[in-house]
Image 1 (cartoon, rainbow, N blue to C red):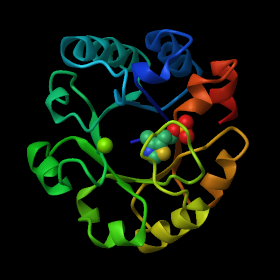
Image 2 (tube, helix red, strand yellow):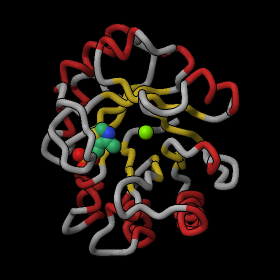
Image 3 (tube, rainbow, N blue to C red):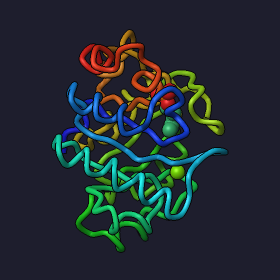
Length: 202
Ligand code: TZP
Ligand code: MG
């Protein structure tokens, strides 16, 4: 499971270009994982969401990029997702694990309290953050810095961890130095003037 450059996007993040075009360029440049996160005010639902999911899934398959679905358990099988990512307010990790014993499951963990109340061993990786301030998530929690990655890694040395939130080509190396196995980004790629360059610099 290579989470080194983990790109997250929904149609709401693709303001200038089609999400398919952005993902294709990012995949070509070397992202290793992708999460379909269709969320927020202008997010697609129903058939339109499923159809976009299929198109993005196909791109990931062509480039050998892992495909994760955010939260929407109903889409995991239709899209043949490699994995599912859930937050603290989504379906309980125990339930997701029972439903999908063979898929990768990621869990967001933002604090010691969340860590202590989660069945961490049931996850395949943890999303740690927001590391830095982000404007891509309306209800984002307070930025926790790279110290949180160090702390999580200390508690769970063999659990893969990806940093998320405000990560850019300038600060990605600090996230990795703190012990993360990869970086998850939205805007560092969707808002890049040159997506290929952004991915290679990450
Ligand atoms: N979860 C925590 S921060 C965040 C999510 C989905 C948004 C990350 O977006 P960006 O643009 O990389 O800061
Ligand atoms: Mg969620």
